[in-house]
Length: 279
Image 1: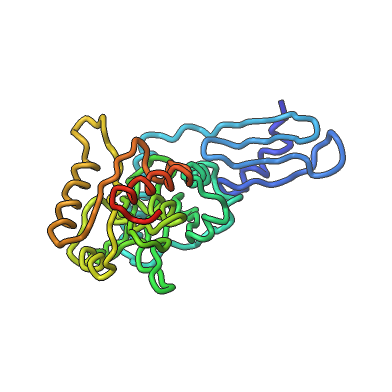
Image 2 (image 1 turned 90 degrees about the horizontal axis):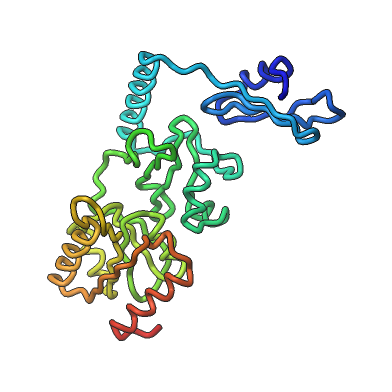
């Protein structure tokens, strides 16, 4: 076990989530890595494989309440500002592991993350997903990676006509979330409704497009209070049918973002066959 006297002071000077290389008395070179983690300070030597760990003291109840209040105030301030939260960290390799894993689980490579425009905001400890129209950010979502606070933060603006659009095809696939729409857009045309409701302005946009629409919302089967995703999909289908849009509902056990590209293609090919469209 490494003696904290040789590395702890340097680790404590680092901002949380950061690391630094130091020398170690086992040989030449900066082979010792020290880290400032949320729960403590760590060290590891890549030459001798020795390691060290010093946990942070547990916060008092008053300190915990103070931190929660400060975080809630910061989140309210962010939602009141239509501008995306900054600073923006686009260096995916330097993000906390949980931030990277959330996007990697959606089968996104670093080049896809860059194309999506996603970035990490250290102040909020969230991944920011921008919605871009005509080269301009018109909306954004800040996704929690720790489970603390709301799952998503969103600016409090009128979003009745907004959708996050990706790809191009002769059909439009409606999804709930941005990542699902992006993944669909890699092989077709995906529109994220940024939720589970369709508004009159979005219906008007679909009518203007003149394309068949596939409704691919999450299957919440097994939830305690029914299946809200498919209940919402049924309402959307009725809205589309009422205005004369050719449509079809897709139900899969996994969200679109959790399927492989080949699986997404297979699902859409089956729908095309149903609608008698060319594959």
